[in-house]
Structure formats: structure tokens, C-alpha cells
Image 1: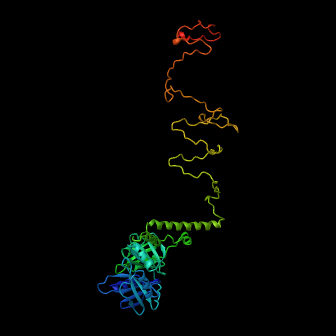
Image 2: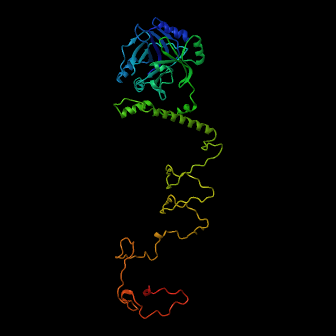
Length: 460
């Protein structure tokens, strides 16, 4: 697709419009015939064309093509049909198309080149679109315009020195009043403030005074038909970070490709750009890459990159973890914050594999107090083993359970009378276990050199 070559204002008041642009804005006509006036603007032409009585004013954008018939065949294969009939003149052939919002686009096959003007420069044609996604498809996929720049709510196409810019209607805050009209254009001067002072001296009233906007310094005036004309100063200087980032930026995340991916996933759905956060992330990624590139360039002059960021201090070098070490586990929320050990304290010794895991003390228990007088264990000493886990040398002692004991091993043991069998090595037991001891009192009396004996069993 060719360059943006002309912006045509169709007006029912040709004389009034010519007076405004010629006398108020100070522009000089390059061509003037009965129903046509063309001004000597640079990069693209600005022309006035008279309308028949009763027709409404409109603005049409013209783009040069090498072969009009070949271009129309390509557009027909893409499902785009011309609006109306072809217009022929001694200078050119013109076919008209309508974008998704009804704005008229001219395809111009010139038979002789147009003379370029000197001042002012027609820098941009602006389409303020409500159906932003559909218009992006039309200008990029159908007409074949390449994307030169894009931001969150606007897209600029490469159409020669004069650029076509697509704005989202609801987000076009870069131009204060031009979103009130579907198509606008911008005239550029190297010194906008001086031009504005000159226009005020001619009695021109500004809709918006020169202010800094997203695309640079801008102002707006209103012509005889009520169109808002954007007056611009030089484009703002691109930061060095962004200029360096252009070499590292890729086009994988462009919005047009996001539209195609959306259409592939949902063929029947209306194409869209998706979340605007994708575009914002792309801008941040490009700016970050540019800053990194600038940092590497500066650090190369200083002898290399220093990650410490301090004033000449060397930072601790990075030491990778050894193979097989415990992976990093983030602390849960609400846990005790990390407290570094004081200098000179005992170094941390990891527990051996298979050792008893650490069990935290219950709440309210006595805090642990180390014993300062406990000597350290000598090397080679027997490790501590808890009693319940300590093995006996001759094996565990068997404990034969008794059948007459209640289950569970709790409670008093029931009384079992002794059998009447004679005791080995002594007299038989007395019946009932009471009465005087046979043989009389025990000889020897009380013990000598000790406490007296207690009462005998038969005396109790």
C-alpha cells in the first residue's frame, strides 16, 4: 500500500473555508480552480472541494497506489468492495472504500506526480474509531498498512512521511477535542508557540491552547465548517532507553497478532485486542530491555558490571547450592522472622539422616535453658538413647500375664488363698492362718544392735 498523499475537506462553504486557511492560518494555495483549492503543505496535500447544495461536510483520506485495478482485485479477494463508481480526471483515477465505521478512503492512481509544498507540514491523519478492533483489521490486513508504533489506546501506521493514526474513541485523551469528530488531521510547525502567537494576532480563537500531550505539544483551532484542526510542534525526543530497546523488541506481542490468536481460538467471536494490560506489559518489557542495554553500555566503559550498586563496595559472590542439598522452602505466613546468629556463636550442624525429628515444645512449657556447667561429650562416647528405645543385653524381660488379673493391668489384685501343701523346709501352715505360733516365741528375743521387731502376724 502507498503513502498518505492527500486530505480532502468536502465543504458547502468553499469561500469561507479558503479564507480561514489562507488568511487566518497563513497557508498559501498551490492550485486553485472553480471547485477545488489545494494548499502547499509538505509531505501530504490539504485540499478543499466544493459540495453540492444540501450535502453534509466530510473528510476523505487519499492513499497512492501504483495500479488501481490490481489493488482492487486484491481487495476483492479479501472481501472488500469499492463504494460507488471510479472517478477519472486528467491527473488521476480514484476509487473509494469505506472502513468499518463508514469513513471514506480514497485509492489514488496518479498519472503525474503532485508538486510538494513547503509549509506547514501535514504530519498526521487521525481516525477516531469506536470499533477500534475492526478498524485495526481493516487498515492492517485489508489495506496492508504496516504498524509503525503502538500504545495502549492508539496505533500508528507506516504511510510515508505523513502517518495514519488510529485512536480508540473512548480513550483518545491525547487530543482534547478532535475525538468529537471521526476524522481529523494535524498541521506541524517547528515553533508551535510562535505560530500560536501569530494566530492570536490575526484573531484566531483556540479551542485548546498549546499544551504537552502524549504525542507532543499540541493546540487546536476550529475552521469554518466546525472541524477541529490539530496544530503540533516537533515530536518529542525518544528517550535513549526506548531507542535502544527497539533493537531488542520483538513483534510477537503486537496487538494485530493478539487479534489473530483470538480469532483462531474463537472463530465465531468478534476479534478483539484482549486485555489492555497486554499492551502495557509489552511497553514495560521494551523499556526494561532498553534500560538494561543502556546499563550494560555504561558499565562496559567502567570496566564491567558491578551488582553491588554501592559506592565501591564489593558484594558477596553468588555460591550455588551443592547437589543433593535441601531445596529452598519459603517460610509460612506468621512464622518467626529470621534472626541471624551473633558473631562467635556455635555454627549450625545439620542433623544426621535418620535422627529423631525436631519436636517443638508445647505452649506454656518451661523454656529451654542451656546448662553452662555441663561438659561436652568426649569424642567416641556412646550416643544418648532414650529408655524406651534402649535394648537390654540379654533381651527384653518376659512378663507373663496372669489370667486372674483384670484386663488392662489396672485395679487391685484379687486375693488368692495359698494352698495347704507344706512349705519346703518348714512346718505345715496353720489352718486359717491365725493362732499362736507353734514352738513358742522366736528364740533370741529382740535384735541386738537394731530396732525392736514389729508385732508378729498372730499379734496383729
